[in-house]
Image (tube, rainbow, N blue to C red; front, side):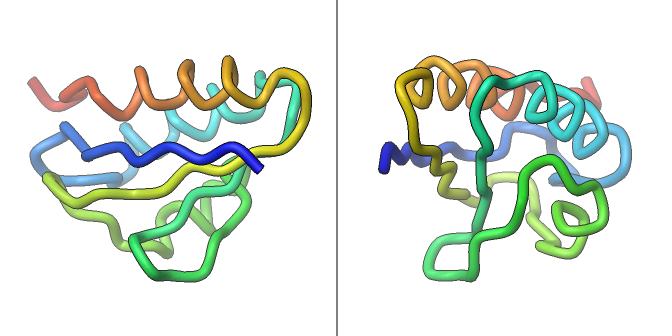
Length: 88
């Protein structure tokens, strides 16, 4: 399992717009990816309801996880989405 930790750049966190962009990017990845708050239960990164249900705030850290040959590239692509302040 490949994991990476990412700090949420959007000031208001993973609310509707940033979460939607993240979920769309996750759905485009060749491997399933999960997202979790630090120490929390991982959820499917392709589910908007699950991602919104995490209630992730700006500045909080999340853990992205994936398995497979393309896991590293998938996590890098999704980390890049989370590291942008989509509210700016």
